Length: 344
Image 1 (cartoon, rainbow, N blue to C red):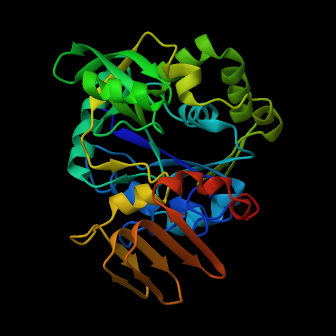
Image 2: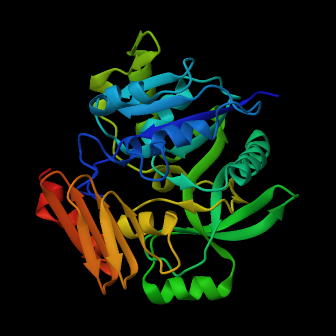
């Protein structure tokens, strides 16, 4: 039985965790939870296990230096996109560089997973379904009516390994999300997928033939440079920018799901990062020089100046160089709209 090939998608604009995260060094390459960067932690979950082969990393030219500085497995392959074209194209490049029967485990490089053993169990179960021709999504048990995540509705069981997908749902409004939580059959879409390379390409060719054709041409015109592979730039530029969800997963009749209760977070904003960190009995956490007095659910991170906070609740303070961010927990989702973040 072939090993699972992790396909790590590595990039980002760096706006949602500004000012710590920047376009030149977005969150995958930062040690936000623990001592490893999120990219290093993503690799570590798939390193040293008999179930996993060396990874394929797909990144852009602007992040190549960070990727190569933080690569853990010397046998890793790195596909260097000439420009960003979203996840359908990135996955297609990786699929075209692998044998048709290779099981790909597509992983974002900027998520946090607190329970790595549960991740491995889910990955092995997803791979079993993928070998039977299913395109498998990781469903995260919904614990709150989140409006920033897509959802998956669980369908009929597929043996002991997983379930068919009844439908994918884009980010809902609050009332709809509350209904999903009451229903109990909906799960957050964790953005992690497993499928055989040939199965994915066949579905892409059926539902997005232009993307598939341009990706094939880009790979045919590409060149190798050590562990790097550079697709043909002209062909790749013709690819429409679409997510794998829109292009394939929402259209295929072979969508499946595995449960993945693995202490997952997409670290999508400062509040999500706060929730993923260890906190004291009042819900506070700080990194750097800080003193918190009579505070509740306060997060402080400073790379220099001392920060003193008294009597505050649900507050986030970030100091990075000469940039200072102060936001409520509810306001954290708006950080990417700041002019400073947009013009970093």
